[in-house]
Image (cartoon, rainbow, N blue to C red; front, side):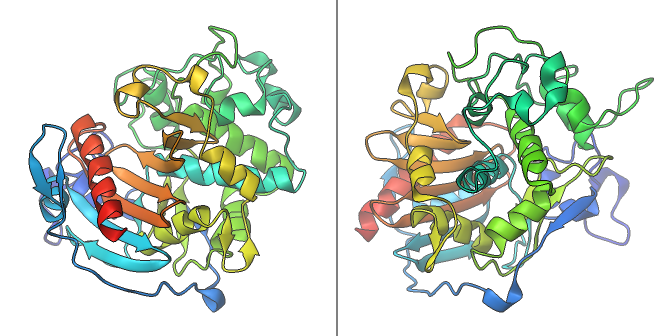
Length: 388
């Protein structure tokens, strides 16, 4: 994207903006591509992140193939845009690559789901939602589809029996239909563009609810709809008032929106590297920022646990002792470390026991590269051991 204008073959479009090499630019320039809605920060109460910088570049670990790798080599080879390590509330390492700057807003992809999960805990504490209540209590329209007898907790933990094919960029898949509705993919010829909530109203039930964890992005959009209905405020307003202003964010964040103005809850959130770290630090501190309790501590505990009995292959291929709860991934049940994860390499890793939060923002050349993810966990473990 160099030049005025850039050459046509270098410009991303709706068919390729999130694919290599275009995503290396587009993930940090989302507002040049899509309509958005602000998540306002409170500039009068920015939380300072003190620094005790250390050079972690030479810390080594064994990658997935058993080869020794340094943190510097890992960051370079895994298409990193931003990397920040917080230990005991202090910035230990903060690095930017690929023209990213401290004030650059980077697309989160499914890290956004964990934000919605934490917001759900706040509204539960306020008595506005009940995870054990039927979803149709908040969204009566869903009586017409597979969610008609599902509980809100089934969506929060992605254990509903609703069909949703999480097949990225595959014509006709449920995920592609959501992308089209959100404005992230071109509308097929001779079709009209639906909205995100048009898609939510369509999936059928294919099995009993609560039996199996299956990753389904649409569940986050379902929960976000319920939150908006229960609080009578938009997702952007709720996020701003209940999380963003309270964690001391230094930048406004934003969601992408569809043609109806609905925020893409499952992956459309964008903010700066440090503000992702502030959100992670709040979860590391049992839901507190400073002396302010934001997310209930009991809800954070739930995010770091989960039902192992419903968690199986292929998810155990990367986190053998993991789980999924309230839109957070648990790396290891016994250790209690948990994380927000998004395709193309977005991660917020939280370990309360070692007071460690790590943020990695990336633009991988493909949606899912399991070796990169496994190496990320190995690198985080090496950093944790080094700092301890």
